[in-house]
Image (cartoon, rainbow, N blue to C red; front, side):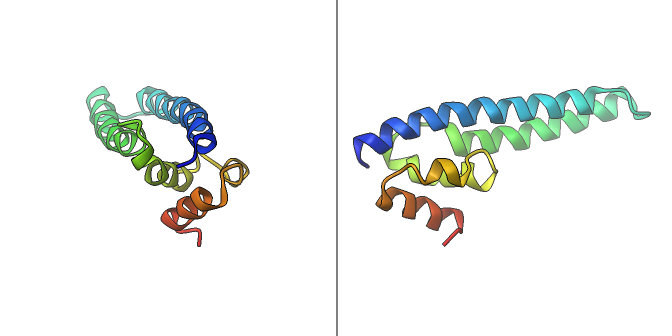
Length: 105
């Protein structure tokens, strides 16, 4: 991974992490809001949702390393956290690898 890609990846990763956490928090607010379901039912839904989202967060963001960057970025692309306008900024080799892993090739 070229240094320019690494620097760009770290910035995009930080922005994607913030966006992902905002999405999870918004989902928590929605689940927690009274909607006719019992508090316990809403709690269980939130618990399950957070467990699933935490696994996804770990897959995308745990372990900042060059060796995992293309896999993690491809997962961010699949989840819609990173768009084509951001992917296109990388070098051809890294961009092609991310697209391939994301299923865009």
